[in-house]
Length: 309
Ligand code: CP
Image 1 (cartoon, rainbow, N blue to C red):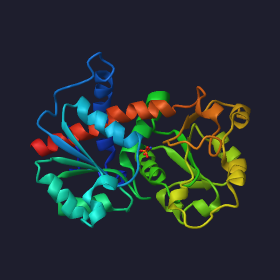
Image 2: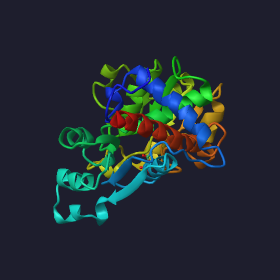
Image 3: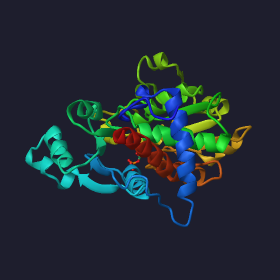
């Protein structure tokens, strides 16, 4: 397979296993490029990309911008907070105005699930979903799997537990799709109130005992409790959440094997994970961030190749 089966990256749900393989093979090349003294290739000199962020971001926004610049694309950045969205302009009007300035590709983070899918049906540009509400965060899941592959040599057959607020997490859903697509075994672990009903229909198992989950897994992906998406309390207190579902060094050291610790960031140190775990040799959290640039270069490059055809 030499090209993606999709024209947009709206979710992992729409990808085939071969797409993921192609993205990783391409990312391997770009990882080598960004470790050179001159970290840039001229591949996308003829492409203009708009980064549209309607929601806060540190890692994803900077990672996309860097990926685009490393590919020599022209880049414009839009933040909803300082835009005419505040004056009532619709999403489609906003994007069509930006596209009329000869923009080829849109990277969008939006608080509403399905915003990227909606946009892809109404505008003429390739859309990359940089996180849509509690729905999907496909490039995060790709960089997570890429980082597991780098640390453990592959994803197929690996046992991965995703711990925490599964209910509100786009990272959890995209990771479940990506890991299952590649043949990993997946469990989710957290308070029952933060695990969606019928999640087993996605082929994952539920474990509510963190110790059992950690003893089972090769990789633990620790998620943040997404207080910003909660209108009610899903557990008695943060202290009790941490006692039951927080990972500390004592527990990590008491396991009879080494496991890989992941976190998509931002971390709430001392809540879902203690500092000594986040900064330990088991953790690949900063590798995930570093790999994000190469993986996003691969996604952008492969989608741009389809625009150019
Ligand atoms: N992992 C992630 O999406 O982080 P940001 O919200 O900082 O982009």
